[in-house]
Length: 467
Image 1 (cartoon, rainbow, N blue to C red):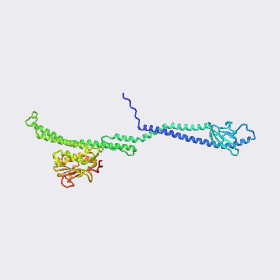
Image 2 (tube, helix red, strand yellow; image 1 turned 180 degrees about the vertical axis):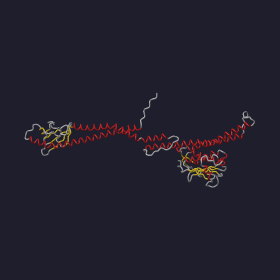
Image 3 (cartoon, rainbow, N blue to C red; image 1 turned 135 degrees about the vertical axis):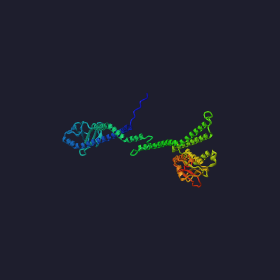
Image 4 (cartoon, rainbow, N blue to C red; image 1 turned 120 degrees about the vertical axis):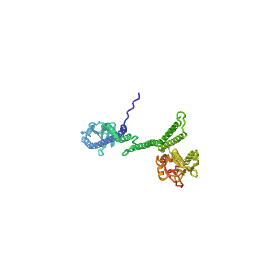
């Protein structure tokens, strides 16, 4: 039994959870900083109130001590009023003489002196924060003590309040983050719907207007993929169309020739079942039809490769070396050896371009094959280094009219009964030229003079020389 796959979470849920987990520590740190600040303000306010209370109580305390004179003070006097009535716990007051003797105290204050030095300002013990105020006229010291428990209680109430707000708002925050994430991710859902709607019959580019920058980058990648997919589908459709167009006639001719040969063998003496003899001329006609069929099939495969080529396979190509290799292939044929000439720069220097070596070889083979097959004069395979690098093939045949020249650049074009195959071959050449961003130049008669047809593949620029 296969394990149950975990339930996938939506991107909005993941974002909501991740953002919440990221926000909570920040919020806790902010709460701690706010609590620290608020606690400082609380302590400051308590200190201000303590100072104000000390100044208010100094002179009433001195007055009570003066009224009790000249009685002997065996123990401190009790103050009639309680200082700091706004506090939940009363402030502790002691009035001490210059020698440190306690002269006056509040009811809640111990009779013994506070264990703090007689110095102006604040001093903190384990239980109290004491403020000492000195009267220069009488030399007396008024010390007012504030219980630290009250201050701690106030700080605790503040921290608890902040924590409660955090606990209450945390689920709300998580919900808000999830809702906002879902709303912002609607554009992603729209992009997904557009991609889902694409098919082999609908490869239109995605609409990327008003989409975030990140989704635009994804959409651009998908559009490039759709474009390449469309090109691949067009190549397949083109191959099917070309195969149906180019192979129909040779196949019909082969069948017709073979059937004619069989019929004639049967007719000759009615010995079809016993002699097995077939007229030689019919067999030769069938072989020529098969050769035509093979030639067309090869051209179709070349066309498919040319239209499906990818610039990712481009590299540095030496046009001089390429031309010499192609010429060597044709020089293996006696007829071509006498008619084909390879013209390269006089210094034999390399001419480098960026391109597909196999594709450029297909161009040269098609051009040379057409020139040798459809003309009777000499043929020149040319490599030019300047003003722009170029490959060219020129024949010295009768040439073509401007109308025929324009028609020859169209796929499946037929210049005449003796020029069958020119259209498909030139279509292959043009497709490869387009892949190389090269210009295909056809002139008849050639610019150098004389008769014939000149076909050149002119590259935009030369590649850097090889080290």
